[in-house]
Length: 311
Image (cartoon, helix red, strand yellow):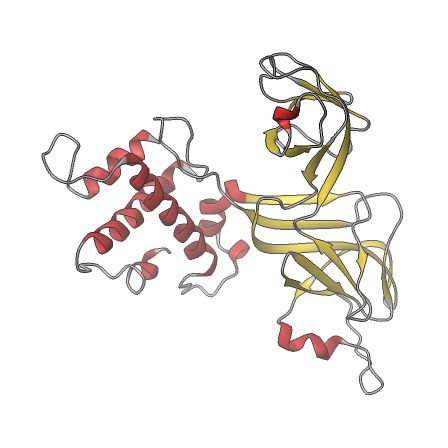
């Protein structure tokens, strides 16, 4: 991460040794994060002379490969929707609640839960309602070293005492959701016949929702379920010949671009950019352009000109 800071200073034709106004490390971090987000948006939605989708372009895939997540759930995620017929929804920001039976006062603290559920190492949980060890309440922790129904968090040896009760809330899926890429559902269908088959959901615009609603004047037939996003909910609508499938095995798969870890070089070298190393200079270049554009009258128009160079 420190190398990206140095590259920014070189790009600005400045260094900390010169007696000139300089950006503080925190300011450089801010602009690098803005540049990182713009880089991601450019790769997904920017000028695309090849007229290909994100996953049909090898460069776009390579640039964002470290941020592509495929989240599958073997629990039935469907929630019935009343305002649309033949429609279910999935909360992209929902939680899985684990019941805590105890937390040790140790380094690291070990949390015991009634059932581990779908929890995995590196997941984040928010702990609430713990007695005695109240210091852990309403804080987010990264899960480590899962063993049976236990997992480790941070050093709790300095806390009040061993904890009892409470809950640990885990984002079931897409807690780091940034941009939708694709999704699939497990369904059964009568015509054409599909039995417990995995089928792609087709994203549609809100203005087209009415075209897929079965009314007295419209009886649409569409093999692939259609979907759209409202707030944190992904709505999935099927026709009268299709239904969700509730047998064993996963019922839903979501592919998305996750929110990258924030660039933070304070203190130095505590984290690294999640994007591939070869993209770091491109991110630095975007950051430098943004910084130059903001410290004096615009010498470079990043919105209109730089957007054309990402391919």
